[in-house]
Image (tube, one colour):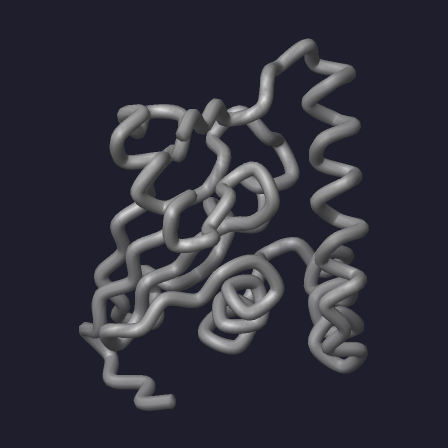
Length: 131
């Protein structure tokens, strides 16, 4: 992976999810010289969401990151973000180090289920996608 500083990173995430916000928004990517575009998936049109869905990308089940003309989805997207930057909170930094060491996609699926549970508690709907 080419870590060309000044590389653009485009991140699609669920802006209504406190966990997603914490993981995405607290990254120290700006300080590392990356050009970042954050896209709250809840602001996308139905056509945009359907376009992702047709590519087997369900933004209810994972974040999407575009970096160096490639897309990374779910577990791979999180691993990429963790490899490019650090979190400012020491406790979260420890979790992230463990996540990278384990490098298990099933762990990301557990995080997605936790996200859905948190959204349910907050009475937030999932990101809608229609075919």
